[in-house]
Length: 391
Image (tube, rainbow, N blue to C red; front, side):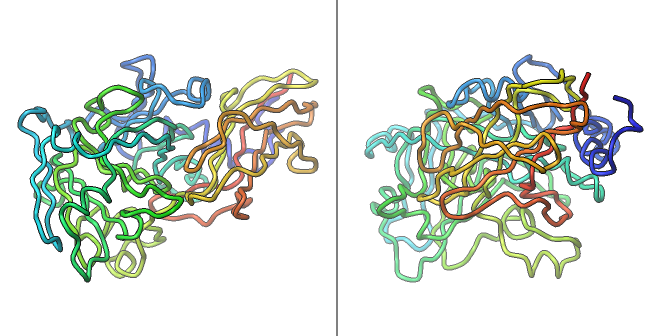
């Protein structure tokens, strides 16, 4: 298939997926590399990397070596386990300074949950206008098992005062920002922090997939907020602050928001992003894959929206630009805050130009055909389109 045979829609989506590496160089001077075979690194300082999609979908639990890395500081902080202390302060009756051994004395919870970057699939927005930031394809997502203390248990020991509305997380990393150094931070509503009947709330985790956190994933301690974008699960956690307002940290107050313009008023008027959206992608084949006429076996991942009662309902795949859809078979465990994997066989003809995937969850949330462009390239969850060549 030659380029002249592509439709305009195919060209748009191909440009957003196939030319990601070229754009990365022009946007930020970075280009993808493979210093480790397990991940594609978009930058080294800070380390930002995603797995190849065929590796990502090999198992329902994502091995740590295939779990995406998102950092903002040029270097990970080096924190000794013996010297580490978590400070708990703000609107509490008893401020706490907790060592790792202190945290281990709380009841330990183990939870499987998916983390996804708000910028996952960001590169696809470039077809409508250049977006900055890490030019993620569809691999900034992973499903892991996390172990640690429930934030609610820790806050109960500290004694939450009346008027508390939000819980801040402050990291121990050092990020250059507007002439000074800051730590990465976030905040979540107190109701999410404490959890409820069907929601464990936030965790203070020290282990990932049955092993201590690696440096890239926040050793020795990070927060884990199931159902929320990855930016709310702060790595290298050093402080928890109970407050009557949202965090003033840059990454909550003036970043990770949906804006089309980036003036001060735009940031001020936009609210923080919290829950992630239903999303899906093909993982078995790369963009531009050559397919033979006939039946093709496809597989990928699908994520329901970030609510405790949301589950994947259906995944549909089309090989004829949406004229006909085939429902995919779901695999992997069906749990709250977790993705599932899917597989399907669809017919490919000489007219096939792309594979399209869409999905819906049990709450009625769905992937729209198109989502509005935003300046930071967040929450791209439109129909996933994989350009292919048919021989």
